[in-house]
Length: 428
Image: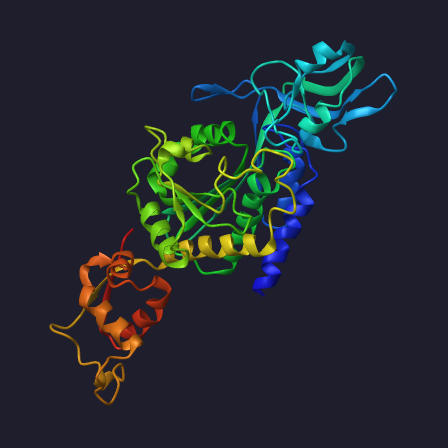
């Protein structure tokens, strides 16, 4: 079953990989429609020109073809062979240029000579191509035909949303983005893992309501917040920005702006036990939608739990972030970490032992019949849990204090409740 979940996520990454996406356009719609076949997201659109906080929704941009052709008729740069070749939001071009002029519109990475970089120019009209530096160095002094078949129009910014009701109106928030072209870890691991988490959420009884969005990064989160901020501030207790979760490298964590929210506590507890060598970044190293969710005045408790953090791995925003970089095991590992965070959110309460003094566990078959020099491990966990179940500590605080993972305490809690030894208090 676990292996199948990982394979399903990798298959979705592979299915979405060839589609050209930007912050607007048909590629975003196609991506969302594919996801919609797996989970019941609602596809929404925000029109060009709408003011969203300090921003304005840009014109919709779509592209059909783009290439650079040499004098011999060879397409030395071809969008249809790799969609990273085009600078995002390039304006239409169809002309002959000199090599000198062409070079002013070419982007490469001398330090990564085999990689095609990912470059965009969303809010300034220009055009350009991206090329591997090794190929750039072989171009000759001659004339070239530049062709870009793109379109700007008054259209829409498109995003996907799903609200899954729970017993309570308080919400858990999941956000991922669908606005980059063919990059597997940075772009597609997030939507794939989020889709599988949604499938799991839909199968389970829920205390909390879940708000899930698939949005264009930055402008999408700003547009969504401008429409929903009041109810989000009222209801969201914890959130996760899901990105860069597909490789098999060490986990990483980026906190909220204040670093002390409920979401921070949840993530640090789970990562601390599941992957104690995780890399902890600061909010000064932010770069994704956590910027918007934690902005002053917004102040939502949203953290990022990742594998290799964006900007920190060499393949980031290049053609090397391909289907070889992500794996089904990497995706499944991230899915498991985030699922444990959600399980903890659903189960976390404050606990208080009902009797004064240490309860007599033996008569309730919760303690070994014979006294030994050392207490068995499971019994020790129960006794330590009882010692801190004073009505002031929640499950996270008890777990951190007695150094036992929360998932090893769930059974202990059930046993104590069955023996009528435990009171519990909801946090929300």
